[in-house]
Each structure stands twice: as structure tokens, then as C-alpha cells.
Image 1 (cartoon, rainbow, N blue to C red):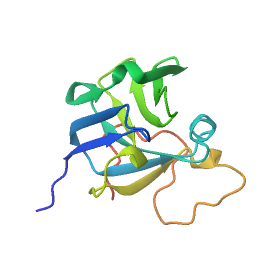
Image 2 (cartoon, rainbow, N blue to C red):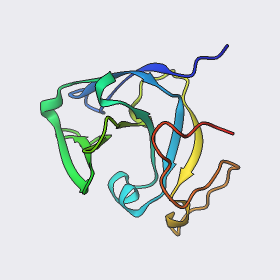
Image 3 (tube, one colour):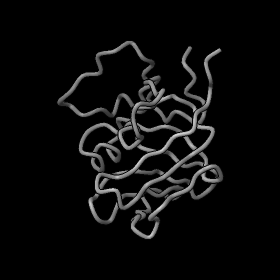
Image 4 (tube, helix red, strand yellow):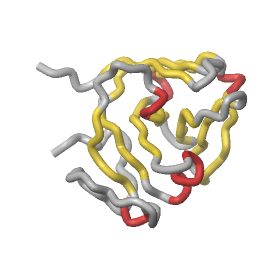
Length: 142
């Protein structure tokens, strides 16, 4: 039987910030909203985690930007790597999929805010495309 949650580890490009998280579903959500695209330089792929089940080493090197009224985006203040989206209202901490150490068991499941995608690319897979957010821990494939 395949596991439904995993323990992950990851880091920024320069290694000043690293993290570990327990109980992470392997589902990668790709967000196409304009805010994610501006921050990441393209699309923003992330995995769901919980603040209470995560540890960040080098957290003093993480810069937090209050992107919305209920959440912050975290990035390494040294190399600029985008690493986190952290909720201010509940126990949610998302990790950028590209920052997770490989090999891992992650796989794409959904596109969020698909109608907001950049005009310069197409979404060319058969994964579900939503025009809103994919709620944390609900990206279970059909």
C-alpha cells in the first residue's frame, strides 16, 4: 500500500535556510495567479504542510513578506530562493516543490487560478484546472 503522507526535507539555493516537515501529502499544486507568478518568475508549485509539523533551520535568514491579509511568503534573505507560504490564520505552511530535496514522492495534481495564467504559456496537461485556490490538504487526485 502506497503511503499517503511523507516526511520531507528541503533548502534554499545557498543552504542558509533548510527545513523538514512531517506528514506532508505528496500532492503538488501549481498556482498561476499573478502574485505567485510575479514572486517566482513563472508558475509557483507547492506542497501542503503544517506549521506544527515543520522545523526551519536558519529561520533568522528567512524574510517574510505579508503578501495578503492572511498569509506571508518566505524567502532566503541571502540567495533570494522562494521557499514558503505561511498562513497567519491557521496551521498551514506550504513549501515550494522545487526546494524539496530529491528524490521524493511528489507529483502534480492540480492547477490553481488557471484562468490567471500568463499570456505567454499554455497549460498542456490533463490535470484539473481550477479558477480559485486549491484548499490545503485537498489536492487528492480523482
